[in-house]
Length: 389
Image (tube, rainbow, N blue to C red; front, top):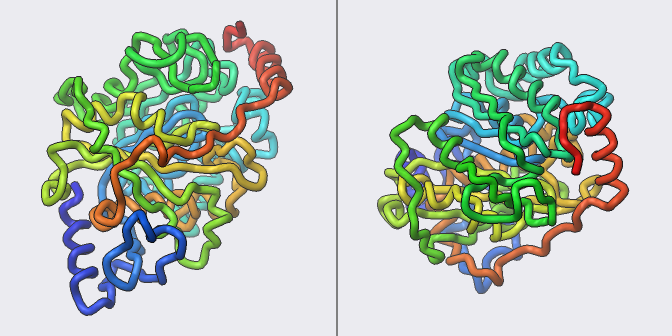
């Protein structure tokens, strides 16, 4: 719930100007306010220690980002959905570019457990004991030629190790390519034409929410008011001492605020973060993948952070390899720390934001080259896990 965090934000903004613990303050960055509206007060606020409990989900590199977010902040993440994403620490392997996409060479889980333990011992992530009992949803499409099912088997095993096998559901029986999975919108289920949204007659957002929050989740709303999609600053929440340009994130994120969560009711609602995949920035996903419809009917605010291309990342993936810094998968990682700070100051972020329009969309990064796809298809076929069209 947002109530506690919203109360702290109000105290900080309307007090004497000096944010009380557990906030840290740093000067507002330029270039975000102007015509879009400015933040109240002299400081931009970010939580030094996350307090807001929330759920998360993501697809492809966004699935890898979910692994980072869940493990780093397991004390406050209530559950996670990972679609075509690799396990935590996969990018640390010397064979990451092959193992974490195609599953060959085989991902060494013992190496990942050791990596996780070292991060935890150093205090860079929450204690892994917080993972015990957390619900995790893992998905691999049988026709996915980008991230092999062999990778998702390891993701399933990794989180089964920490969360308990009974708490992890692994769905691997839908004949989908690589993308967001819906039951009412998108390309054909086995297609890969660049939208990354596939109509597979499978309600994946519903399946994720039911696993994370229980069977009492209401059916998705049939009407999702466009005015409920908001456009808010991300860059105001970059960790202190980080260069924003190195974070490889757009300046703004999209946030869907359900009708029942508007204004003073915000504090009564839950929060869910959804991470897009490579080449998946923009408003099309937030409008059509189905999470917002479930948010509308269940009082769940849906936050859609936005990545962008950068050095070593030409297609705007989320960082699962360390291109934004060696601390990328820790409390100090620029991307995950920015998102956690944003959701812990969501009331003021929304107050300074605006209604999202199609004009707020971002330029979509280029898709993978034909050589990239051919190499992935060959590796996938050699692994014997996927159907390559």
